[in-house]
Length: 390
Length: 162
Image 1 (cartoon, rainbow over the protein chains, first blue to last red):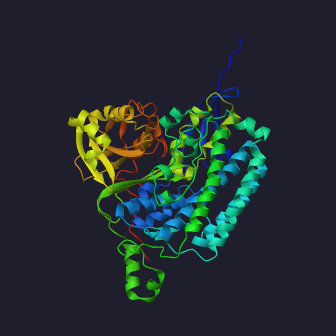
Image 2: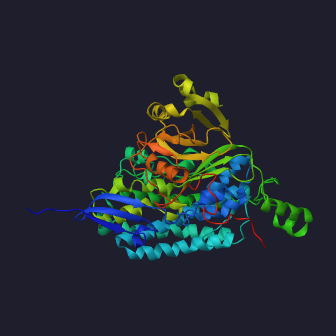
Image 3: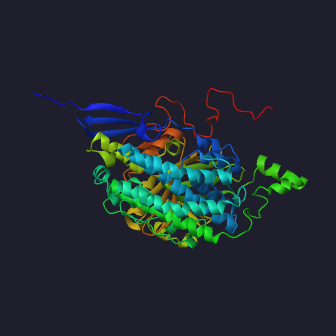
């Protein structure tokens, strides 16, 4: 009598298609997956613990290092939570620039997703093209903040500085050319028989299961749930912008791909509307007890220098209470929950990372499929380990 | 106002004895309830009031600040009604355990593992209660307030010396 046994296969943490240091222990029956056990934590830096020992301004650079493919979305979520706690009003110009940068970040994050997802499935050309476009966004990052990835550009109450003059033209040119590039990607993938065979019917998760397991963002919308925080729980002035929220029907990897591509086109439209709304004005709230003073005051007056020194070293004291702010980050709902005991540091800062919760769905999405399909599922979940492990 | 919140009205009607506190701060409603009826309340909110998404589940350590050391925090969201509700329940250090919410939402699985890992709160009947971020042989629970920032085996940080 011939007998069969299942095989245990280790995948990662150093594996090119696990998008970082994700380790999966697979139980295989031939090529069929019967069990998936993810092991995470290889990148745990204790950001929540560190935050309890830093002033509110000092935490901001740590947030860049969560989802390092979308630093400005993390910045935005964090500062909005602090601004809610401090009840600070942000000037309109700062709000508009934040939205432009947040949407460029969405484009950037989705470009990396598309590039790596396609590469995992075997389409190398898209990888090269998408990284070419990403480079333009990185240059914009560098233009406004001086850094390509860890931007640390936003501040509680506004922005660290105004954008340079060439910003509008650079972003405008990019946004004009982006839809053409998106058509190019679609031409390479959407009707490509290999792409269709690999993605249609792969990683199916129903809307009920998706909500039960806590999926958010494009992964949830791919299952047909019409929900977007930018539209449904508006923040940072998104109510002034018109955009469509795409949803999928078949709950599979192909639909999630379509959803993200439409999101990229909509992001371009939001950036365009933002550029049209951009008017001269201050970029930092007039709120000296919370905000840094303008740089010219710091350099030219003793009061400004003292003010800067006080904000940089002691920070500000927040009222006792607790707030939660969720934003629609490229990967899903990114939330910051701050508990304040009245001190100048948060008593507890909890980060709700979208990738952490979304990764839980991996077992549901790939049980009974082939090992090669698992790679497509990891790609479609769009995870970043910096954010999962914190 | 917190008193007129749709969930608070219903909870006061059905679980009056279990409600410890209702607070509104910056437009966010927080209801603190007794630990004994937490699962009942969460299931009721999910089944009857359409709070179908468990956005987040976490804990706060109030060492030396409150009589009950830990506070469990459940952040609920209703996709049909687009509103949020925060439910909190105190957990004492002596009886550092609470029933699992995985029976209500599958999301709770990893989130509870994280709370167990970083705070050391036990979840009764959890299907897979293991450490998730720290290694399996790690000692202590890093997010507790009495856990040193530098780790247990290093000199505490005294600030920059230069």
